[in-house]
Image (cartoon, rainbow, N blue to C red; front, side, top):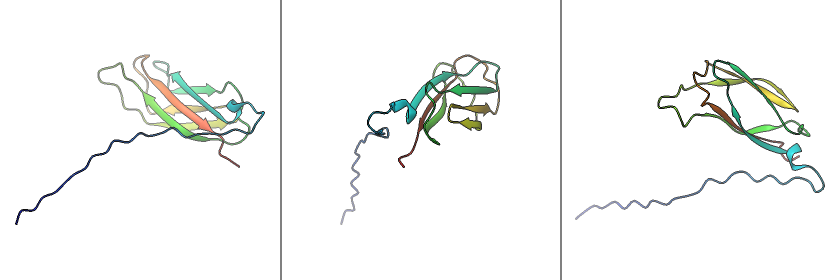
Length: 111
């Protein structure tokens, strides 16, 4: 008797969350994304929204990206301030180049 094992691999796509805003409202009061440069040698960064959020928001995406440097520093970070008009992050260290970015998305959850 021969034992066999079959492995089936399927690819899948991760979809971004879909936000539906109430009719007649500015969608940016509910959902906004950005790709913000982190200044070399600066440990904190203030992010200001283009439009104030209508209520308390959640972070859908929040990560530090550096696809340029051969050996980028792996930073941890903390949200040290949060308001309806933006937020502030504090990094665990100092960026050594201008190639670090904060990729972020905030969304006001459905009520």
